Length: 158
Image (cartoon, rainbow, N blue to C red; front, side, top):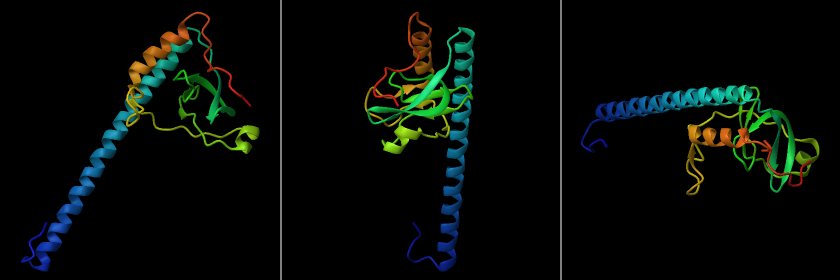
């Protein structure tokens, strides 16, 4: 913090330096986030390629709206057994939780892909956060197991 006895020029210089430092910090954080997203996209692309190689068929992805399910028009694989995350055949990472609305249940929902994280569920309750690579390894084992249904259980699907 600038000293009260400093003149206006010194205070302005201090503010300019703080502003530059904040901008540099924000730029570094953005670069780190972009690198994390790129690594996560690579992992998801490898996961999809391995599923295809193993013959695991993609299926319709449905969004969760409370206790109901809504059509999305997307095809892919669920990344979590509970159906909260999906990987589209387009390579998009989708968060499949939506606000419960009657119109969504009737018409379906349109989802946009999200930037995938390397740590899924960061900031969530204990036990809900998992590294993306660990999640993909577990899901690959589940989806490759015989007689395993790649979609979550049917609960009020519309």
